[in-house]
Image 1 (cartoon, helix red, strand yellow):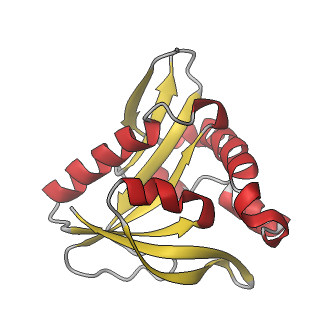
Image 2 (image 1 turned 90 degrees about the horizontal axis):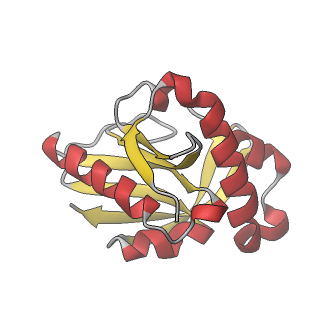
Length: 167
């Protein structure tokens, strides 16, 4: 098994991150969404967010050959509306390359998020989970709050699940 390291993402990771997101989401989301996941939604979801890359709270897992094999992060601001709620952080844009699923990458990145968010005063994490990722987040202790339609941009939504966890 090839090893990987986790590190804080930088804006230089954009190309590798876009490749990771495309490989991950186009493969791993299809069984949960079938035809409901539009090409427009997939194109938006598989592009890295420059604000997240520059935030210092977004992380990547990098294989020995420099390929990015996992990512995820957190922000104080809620995705979509930027709302800030005291003590609440938001888990953002997690993905694992399909060939690397089951190797603890998501858990390792989540542990970084929890440690750093806790040090910043976050006591609760919230996430907008995709349907296929609900089991992953539940394995980390997140509980389902409600189903929702996550708006990616005006007129483009994806069915999802709001989940929360005390940290």
